[in-house]
Each structure stands twice: as structure tokens, then as C-alpha cells.
Image (cartoon, rainbow, N blue to C red):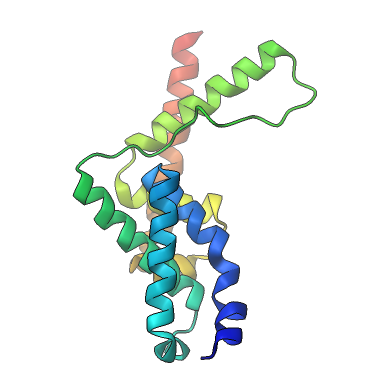
Length: 169
């Protein structure tokens, strides 16, 4: 694989890899460092990349593993920083914006409570839009187990949100 082929086959996944690293690490600088490490590993092994059905899935797998190593090394987990989030709702009045922000915060808190594997699968499927087969390549979990984990994660978040909403009334 030459430089031009690397640019066309590997670099288009840059934003997805960065979003996943940022999602897992919750630190822009660390996510950027991980992204550089991923591209360095891919470039170092460019002669082996033809063996993979999906270079993007392989890159996601490397990203996930490097992020998990980084998380283990710092001994603490902070998954989602909602301070910087902005809801794009031009028609919402301040009360509606507050309600939407509050609901987003609740969902993020519920996602934090999920087991790590469910959280990762939920992110890959619902945020990144990966197919089940791609998630299987990234996580090493078979498709049926992915479907079960995704269903349980969604149900857990939905039930938790309903419980919070009903309690608040």
C-alpha cells in the first residue's frame, strides 16, 4: 500500500475514529494522541492491511483497544461531558431548551451506568451508525450477542428515563 492508497482507504475514517476516542476518553488531547497512535500503527503495518475485509473496522478496533489501555492506566472513567453540548433547536423557547437539556443530561447519566460493553455497542450502533457485522469486527462479540446487548442497553436507558420522568411528576 502506497501513500495515495493509504490516504484514500484509511484517512476517511479519521472523524469516526476521533469521535470514538473522544467518547471513550472524554479528553480532546488524549483523543488526538490516540488518533495519531492509530494512524502510526496502521502506517507501520500498511503492507498487512490488504488482509482485512474492512480497514475501518480494524482501525476502530485499534482505537478502542488503545483507549481502553489509556483508561486503565489513569484508573478513572468519565464517559460523557455534557457541559459543551448544545441543542440545536431554533424554535424552542427557554423553558423547552431547559427541558431538552435536562433530558439529555439524564440520558447521559443513564448511559454512564451501563456496563462498558453495552455502552460501547450502543455508541457504535446508535451514534456512529455501524452495521452489526462491523461492530462484531471491532468488539469481537458475535452478532447475536451484539443485538442482545444493544437491546438491553436501550431498554435500560428507556426504563431509567421513564422512571426518572414518572418520579418527577
